[in-house]
Length: 562
Image 1: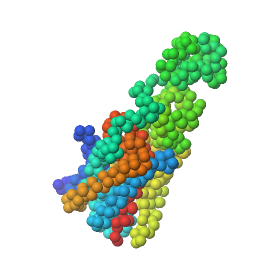
Image 2: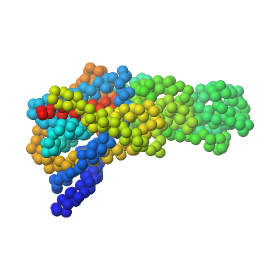
Image 3: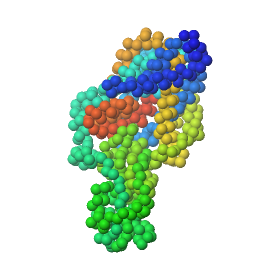
Image 4: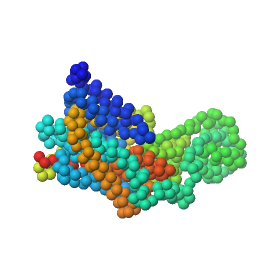
């Protein structure tokens, strides 16, 4: 034991990293398909390790770790958040606001009724509403109250205790509520409603599975005979399936394949499109030829494009195709993903800023089309560290500003400021792709390291006090957490379905998004036997991340008695 205490005093960072490592491993363990999650496991492991001694970490370490996490959350959600401020997505925004507002009112009601301190109130809000970032914004707000060190430390321990007790319960209840309880409240069969929605998206008939699958993009060469004298446009229209003439070689010379270009007998042409359409092209054009050289000049590609054109936000794929117009010629949509999940494809599927389109076609055509949709995601992009550091610095500076409410200074704190800065920087990046690169892999690393390190530091530094608080008030906190999780979900479900008249399938996805519980979307998709719940996730997720995060300073300001 003496050796452990010596290591704690000499190098506490070893245990911080150990808590992250062990907590991450435990968080990935699934029992009957359910996993507690990394954040909760890291905190629990850190609290338990914290029983071995007194850990002290410099405050600046926690500020930097949390700022990295919350800035990146804002950066990721920025384009979707600002795009959500439109009439087309107003209902989903309203539902997320109702859920967060109801949660805040219940937390404050418990705080005033049971005389909860700001730390405990913030902790149960963070856990029951499954938003870990509340821990950071509440801690930052408490740090600016000028509390004595021992009082501040106890308040942070209460945050950790409240979160540790209520998070797992809130997470499980959300997982169960979205696929099972919400449909019953709306008095619908989720599976039947999903089929209806798929039929609507398909134009009135339930689409067979193959309509949503991807057929391989190919390019083939033909010797023009029967097509002699006809224009490129007429050939493409007769073959159909959005097939495109990619190249014309006439007597060894390349001819630009404009729509009004007339083909001549003996031309070698390359047709690109779906396999089934190309097979049927021979009688229309002429015999297929083995022309490796001209085919090599047409490099096929599969490229992911991040949708950041706000004019496309909330519009159907049909509308998007019309708006992109001729620039979409020769480009095929292989998949549309939202929050990492594939969205069912049909002409009426709506696209939102932040979605990722997987486009297939020649490199030249895809790059032309991508310019009208968003920015190409290139795996080789490096993170713009200068932009990242400057953005966080500006956010921390903004977090110092405060407004007097009674005798309390209401402030966003460093965490809230970093979140706002992240939102703005993510939006700027979507408007000007040449600045602020932060690839998805780098984003996830910053989120995992930032949140994991911050939570571990909180747990280790306040382990003993947090464990005492759990033992003293654990059962009461569990009861409060249950109410704080369930009631907002019930109110939001009824409001969305009966007041906003949202589609019940979309409502289930929106509930999961507003609570920022990704796994609940999976549960809804499994219950519906369809991917359609994913259609409601993006906007509430972006709004929920912002609304729930700023609850920390609000709860502290409302419950602090001086």
